[in-house]
Every structure is written in structure tokens, then in C-alpha cells.
Image (cartoon, rainbow, N blue to C red; front, side, top):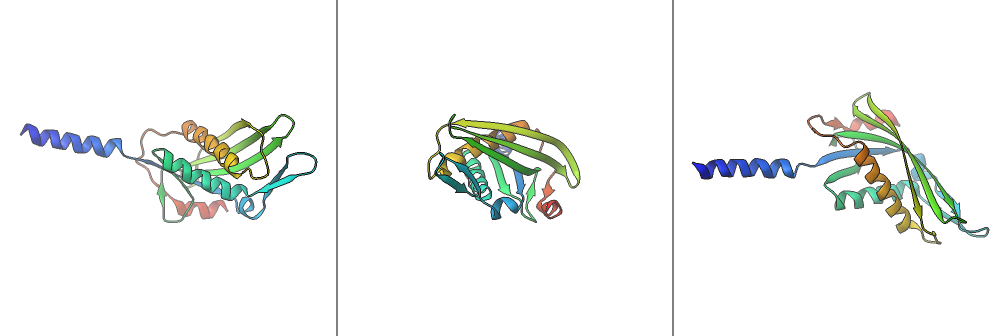
Length: 167
């Protein structure tokens, strides 16, 4: 009898300890269609695609953490949906890359949980191929976002079709 209780307790412990929290994010199509750029010096301008780099950072962040962060898709269930609007700036003289991330956090269709402004800066010179540095910068920014909006119970699941309204 004690073994049965132990098995039941252990299985419940395993289920609750490995329960992941799912998040979806929405970036405007503008960030996928229009590359951003910054000046390394007076002669060299570097272009990068904010949308693609955010997608890559979200995949890497999900692989390294217990949180699942995906691009918003209809039919996918999640606990929160983020509407993201990033603004970036690189100062070549100070070798600092700044990003302000305006976030609207939705917990139910049409129910805005909170508005956030998350800031992150990286002190590192960026060169002609800055994609990996910018992805690491965005991963740190996403970590700040997840920690700022961490939820305790994940009973409610929001359908990703809500993102169609955000466009």
C-alpha cells in the first residue's frame, strides 16, 4: 500500500515539476520586411533583420530554459501573448548597443494584463557580422521580459488566433 502511495506521489511530483509555461509573441510584419541598420563608423553601415533575429533568439531561449517562447500562431495554446515593439540604437563611440522593448501583455482575448518598457544594453563593439551578438542581446532582453511577467498558475490557455486581431 505504501508503494502505491509513493508511486502516485512521485508521478504527481514529476508532472508538476516539468510543467512548462508557454508564451507566444507577436512582432509586426514591419520588423520582418524592413531591415534595421546602424553605423560602425562613418563609413560602414550594417543591416540586420530584427524579426528574424528575434525569432532565432526566442528559439535559443526556449531550448536553454523551461519556458516555451514561440512566434504567435493560430491554434497554438499559451498562457500569455506578448505584443512586442523593439527600438534599437548603437553608439559606436561608446560601443554600446541599446534596445527598448515596448511590451503589451495579454492574458485573455482582449484583456490587457500590463504594459511594460524593458531596456537592455550591451557594452561590446559590434562589427560587420553582428548577428550572433544581437541574438545574445535579444536573449537577455527576453529573459528580462519573462522574469517581469512570470505567472504562478498556468490554468488559462490563450489561443494564438488572437494574434490575427493584433495585426
